[in-house]
Length: 123
Image 1 (cartoon, rainbow, N blue to C red):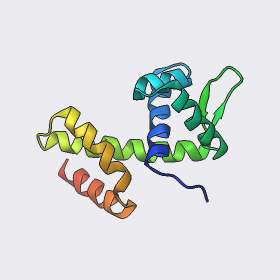
Image 2 (image 1 turned 135 degrees about the vertical axis):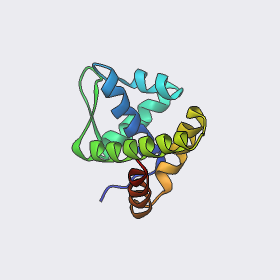
Image 3 (image 1 turned 180 degrees about the horizontal axis):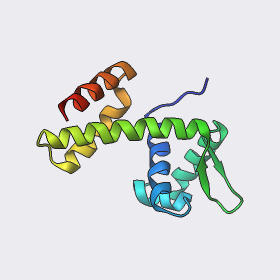
């Protein structure tokens, strides 16, 4: 079983979000998006590749593997649901997004699913 942590989840979510708006994702795109040094991103991408969460082409294009995509979608959904809910409660959108980034990693699946069901029942 592969191990994830908040850092891994953030990188995978970022790759997913970038892949939705860019034709290809490269390390420089991730560095720019997260405000990290390219050298830090290179180390992280090597680790993600070793864990088989991403593939990197000869041209440096980064793609999520099936397992990487599964994690990225899970975290992306959590971020979207939590941040949208917080905004409906009157939280500033940037604060809601920042808080969702923190909460998306610590909630159990059971708690998140209960929260999501509750929110969907309110709509």
